[in-house]
Length: 197
Image (tube, rainbow, N blue to C red; front, side, top):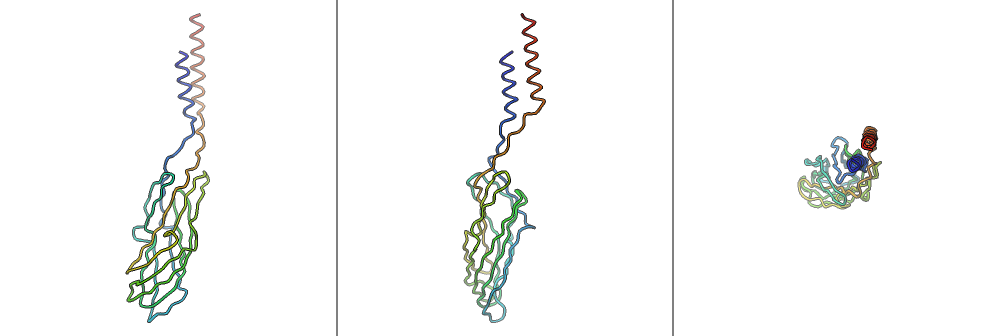
């Protein structure tokens, strides 16, 4: 009977062991994310430069373990007209789970011919950013590794998320019913012993 009591106590106390998660799922918030360019100067025959929008494949979910990285299409740039243009870029990458958003900015320039980007460069002046959640989970977001080359009719750049650390989840409290169960089993065992004696 004592072995059974010990087994019951161990099982009940196992309920209070710290809970942990080996992975974290990221759900991209498409509505909260965005990218825009503002022309800073140009030398055009008519109109030239680029427009930017979220990539057509942007907006999925992915799951990472500590140390893993997910890279995905983020922004698409489309050339306009013929000429040389410079621009500033602003971007936001938002997540609905975990709830977080990262904003970044940069600048670049393109040489376009008939709406096709012959040569283009994109420099993010915002370094990769680390986000720390309330439970201690940390992840880093980088846009195109800080540097991108734009070529073709439509050029797509990427973003990446690296899960640096999964936060500590507090211990699950031992339910009061488990304590009552252990106490009841103890009383039964003691009663049974007295009857034998």
